[in-house]
Length: 211
Image 1 (spheres, helix red, strand yellow):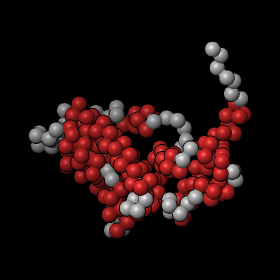
Image 2 (tube, helix red, strand yellow; image 1 turned 45 degrees about the vertical axis):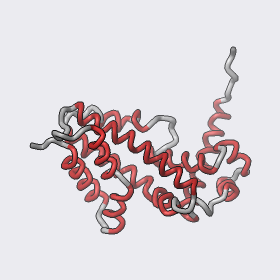
Image 3 (cartoon, one colour; image 1 turned 120 degrees about the horizontal axis):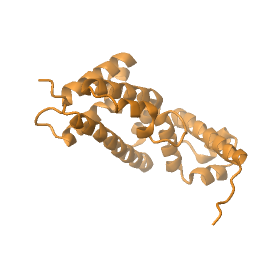
Image 4 (spheres, helix red, strand yellow; image 1 turned 120 degrees about the vertical axis):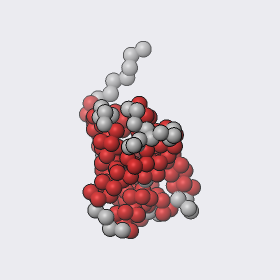
């Protein structure tokens, strides 16, 4: 069966529309909060109809997840985080300490892009079931990612004696979190560099066999 022809111009128009909606939603979520932001308001800010927003994303929680995913990786290219060039390059590092410090650096870059939205989500999760469900989803995704990090440390033969991959994953997962980042940079006023450096060293202390 022949595939339907999709005009490159039409495809680019769709992508630009998605980008306008995504940018508008992100700005409004930060300004008003998730619950107070309506699809109608997002549509008006993006210069499209509310039906267009529904046609593109389906639901408001799906729109939030898309905004989150774009801020996570830094663009709207359909390339998973683990397939990004900087992540693939990181996994070629064979020194476990440098690998974890590099992972902390990547995590710091993600927090700079995503942190303000995560604060909005965390602040509203107690009263909005959409946000509570979102946190469950993204914490699960983050657990998978930190599990890959812990497995890499194990594969390098550098995991602390008596520590299994699952417990190493949980320690890295905790250190690579909004809560830790906010305590350091938000409440205590640490700089980005100070926070990244400390988190990287804390990860090394938590999981590496340094004896």
